Image 1 (cartoon, one colour):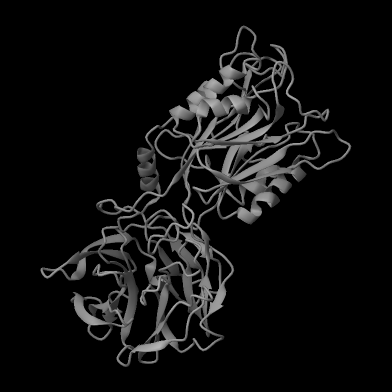
Image 2: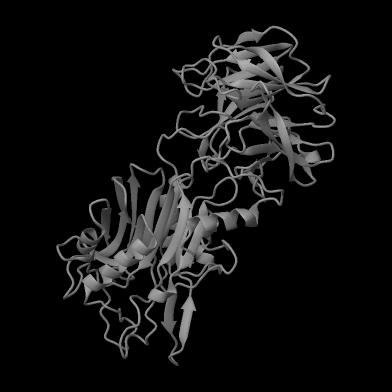
Length: 576
């Protein structure tokens, strides 16, 4: 088990990022983290020692809750997903848990039914059997939905319990899937669970006792739609798909399997998870309690760390994946839209994610600013004769596109940039090269993500220029432009002005920036130090990163170059 989260994150990044020369780490703030424990605590089954229904410490609820509290403290957990737990009455598991965790926690419980239709927790326990969620946050909404089809098979019912909080955007859910392998309702129950969480697929955590192995065919509708925390290794010695359940054969031999899972949204690139471990030390390894229990449940707690977002927190400029680092998007030769998540030092995560499967050929793409006003950075694209906003549904996944800037008339626009808030009204604006002129299209406050009519802010000379949007490169509070003169290969910084225009230019890069040498450019503060940087494809098919610097007068200039992408970039048609 790994207790140092920073070490785990560093190992994960090393495993997936491109091999490049090391650079200083980004100073960007870390996103909030969910530290989740999912555990079937075996809290109510009442079999005697030697029986398959035996549960250790079943008649000592305080002892079991004390162990949950210890587990929570050891892992600094802020989310608990608990199955087979009694709640809703004084002295029940959830009442004892509330006292053990303290006032910073909120607990919700949902009632289940056993096959005989009863839900009461049998003596000496109190309350009703079910599932519970505890969060170290303020719960703002709770849903409790039955998942087992009603019928004549038996009367068992198991809920899907979900909560929303004031502190995190992620919907948090837990479920317990029917255990009997011959129960004909299991597939329908799994399909119901998937359908219930599908509307929140872009930002959800779903954990529990699924009673299915990772490769079970019945589990695939969920397993393929979401990411599972333990399907990858997070460092040397970390085992994939660690087993979470102990049963016994007729010959009294141990039979370990993975039945517990924590699923989460699939981001546009990489994974939201940074840790996943099964704490097998807490499993009762006695033969159904004969001779005394050696643990607390027949299930191991499954522990996962993953990132979330703070509601309405402003996104880092250029950051689509909500990890605090600017990202790179690219259109490839097949017309797909790729997402390369930034690591925070100029490198990008490999392999890339595909967030647009087709129809992007010829697109002009840009991303800088929350065009829709939902707290996430969105994508802007000119495709054919129309300008589109693609809302970011969370972590780089794109939603249904919205036409902006009127109906048609954009085919004559050679370049379009989401530049940030140029006008100072708090809304992101768009710059575009139409003919030989530079236009500014302010954000429409009455119709987000719409745009107001454009106005000319550069009357001539813009046709031979390549524009990129670095944000506030000179740190004067206004967005700027990095502009390449294609005829000379010189890069210029055009400073944003109070009237919404760009001028007062200075040289950013003095040579070697011709289209033949550096075909494609994308700007942003990729290393998080407050100075504008550049990604550029090179004539040899590689991707280069230029860390921004300053000259003797304090003007932003290009700086140290590092190769951050091997060959293959010659086939990329556009980056942003």
